[in-house]
Length: 155
Image (cartoon, rainbow, N blue to C red; front, side, top):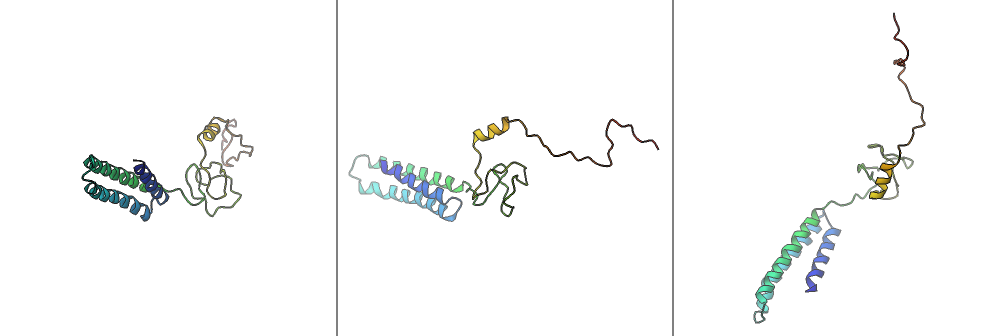
């Protein structure tokens, strides 16, 4: 009976490795069809053994489970193979190495080597509970706008 679990794990590993690719869908469908074929012919070979009919339905259930989960896994999205923002998934290829913030959402970038790591839940919670950073840059004012404490010019 352990052979059923080993078969399922092997198929699901291969499908996960090749998800969103033709080979992943071929492995998922092929494994389900192979189990259905085994379920069709194995009970006939062991017709004299008690429980051969139950074995047939057990193999059919395995085929549906392995094939269905394999198709589900094959449809899962792959991780991006390029540097991206961990918050908004913005493509960071082509930016200067000195870029410290995402140009799309403004969040600080954690790293630029290979794939940008996705922040853990604890890191996001710590960052959300930390006080906002003070901006030390001088505030730019519109030269056309008068400060509120001055009366409007009469002319």
